[in-house]
Image (cartoon, rainbow, N blue to C red; front, side, top):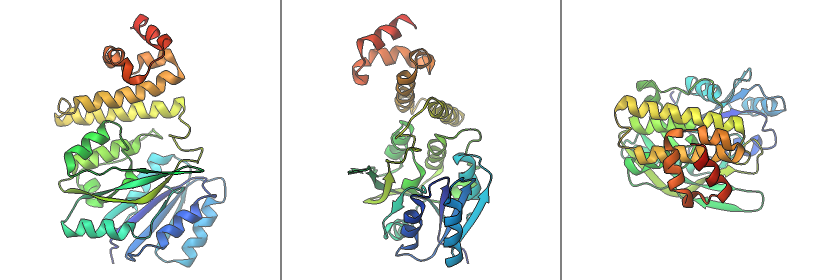
Length: 297
């Protein structure tokens, strides 16, 4: 039988956290799910832990493959998913017991393509609630394009959205791939709803997280993902409609690059340099940064 939900968990070197992640999925109040764990060539005991869980529960399937990165691993997971709906969970995060049931019931009530939720940012010594509630598709899409949490794990979505619209994870990048895919999913979706609850726990004390430890290479991935989204919007003829959101996204990535290398930051999305300087007060520029930009464009 086709499960209602495929829970997809890409796994790479998270032996410290993976048990809590899997236990939270096994504890769901809805029981009609499958869990697909994709071990992306872990060098710690993550893969072994996954195998132990699979031996105990026939609803859990483990795949081991060579290390290819998060984008390729997520693509692999989708290709092996059997459920009507897909829910991604990062292997260092966890979910509340009623998450899948409430999301699925909302989806079934109105035949929704996508159901969104809020989440909790989990730091070492504190938890912060992050509300991402939208009344319909348009504000949700605009917020994602503008770089506000375009992440896969905050949505339950129909697998058919990806199949019918030929949506794939971009090759060759290891960051921003979910921004690209979520944008494409929302563009393709017709019926969207958010539930105003906080069932997802996003761990931010893991050093592999992009937000915890941004790097030059990771920012380059974000630049590529941004360009892919812009190209998609142009292809659909709606880039002008989302011009403000695109500028906000480019500005966010540009700020990250500026913090690493001023020269490269100036050359990142140079088409918004004048706007960037004009809105310097929003970026809380130091005078040195502003002078550098003014004299190098």
